[in-house]
Image (spheres, rainbow, N blue to C red):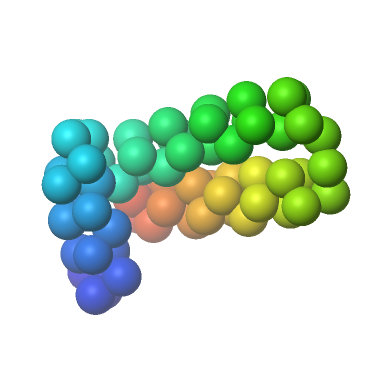
Length: 63
């Protein structure tokens, strides 16, 4: 387990989530709401980055 994984797990638990993946799912949902309310290139990029981050986290967890 990398330092990044440990930090993500710590951040998720501190925020009241069971796992880092659950935290990322919440963040993706919030960014999607923000993008629907105000579609802009900046919001689209932020949403795309967070979705990629979630995808990587899920792939790492499934190994």
